[in-house]
Amino acid sequence: MRILVCGGAGYIGSHTCLGLIERGHSVVIADSGVNSSPRVIPRLRRLAGVPIPVHRADLRDRAAMTALFATYRFDAVLHFAALKAVGDSCRRPLDYFDNNISGTIVLLQAMRGAGVRRLVFSSSATVYGEPERVPVREDAGLSVMNPYGRTKLVAEQLIGDLCTADPEFRAANLRYFNPVGAHASGLIGEDPCGEPTNLMPYICQVAVGAREKLRVFGGDYPTVDGTGVRDYIHVVDLARAHVDALEYMVRADASVTVNLGTGRGVSVLELVHAFERASGRRIAYEIVGRRAGDAASVYADPSLAHALFGWRAQFDVDAMCRDAWRWQAMNPEGYRTVARREPASSRGRRARIGGSRAVDVV
Ligand code: NAD
Ligand code: UDP
Image (cartoon, rainbow, N blue to C red; front, side, top):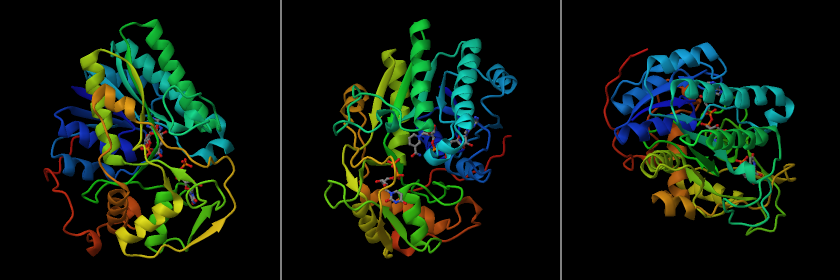
């Protein structure tokens, strides 16, 4: 299939482009660049070994989206393009509504105009708010904790209404838990702007000395060691889930909403210690007060994805930490880094990089 990947230059989108190409699909990226580096593209092309057309386009730009759908005949769209920082969304909710919701509407209109009726949407476990029980199943109650979460819930609802109105429209809402890790090559990974708000990138920056110490938000939760518990999922497992979901949607001619997590809860301190083992570095930390709005424990019941399309996470927390560390050590300043050697602690465990042709298309 030929797939339009909106937000394909971002963290999860870039890994998913590789996953699609490995399974024989062709990929066109549309990305506004609002949260991605242009440097990801040559690396992606090098890893993929095939041409990847890239269009710098904002989903809200109706003319650009219409032109894109007129240029290519797409079989499906993967929609990663959103702003995603919870705290930022509380400070400027209108920008989040505009980017994430208006962007989704214009995309859906462009798809409709071109007769493209398959969408895979990046949703989030945030749509469950503070879950009443764990592990969280897809039929748990939905609620909104912040403007970012509202954009995900509203987008799922818009997509649901479209499926009702157009019986031929198929959608897969993928509710991610906590994506971490990086591609085994160490060439692509997560590159947050400014001070990271998520746990793994913060740990990575402490490990390379860019931050002094981790602040652990809360040591008095009713969990294994008092720190918050989450379901961390390797981004490469997540990428594979997109391809599995897409192919299932086509094969079964069905829409789905599924959780993507490992089903295993890991505390903040467990992740810190796993990272220390993987990197051989000590992670300085201090336990401080709870972060407002944080739940004690959130992890998935991922059994529906397995029952429907046979997907199950394969990488454990050690692999997530090893790959996150390799990426960080090779790219201490993210995509701004020119070139570093692979860290000694992870050498010899690297997967083979497929292809090595640098292709310039756009
Ligand atoms: P990311 O910021 O790395 O990637 C998003 C990409 O979309 C970026 O390259 C950005 O430039 C682009 N983009 C944003 N708005 C756009 C627009 N209007 N038009 C075109 N391009 C636009 O984020 P990510 O971590 O890869 O997340 C991908 C998706 O997954 C997002 O929708 C996010 O909300 C969702 N998600 C992420 C997480 C997480 O922890 N990373 C968890 C749950 C859900
Ligand atoms: N966390 C922390 N220090 C940080 C960032 C996060 O202790 O600097 C904790 C946070 O309280 C939560 C877990 O790490 O228990 C995961 O937080 P993250 O922001 O990565 O994901 P989310 O809260 O969205 O699940």
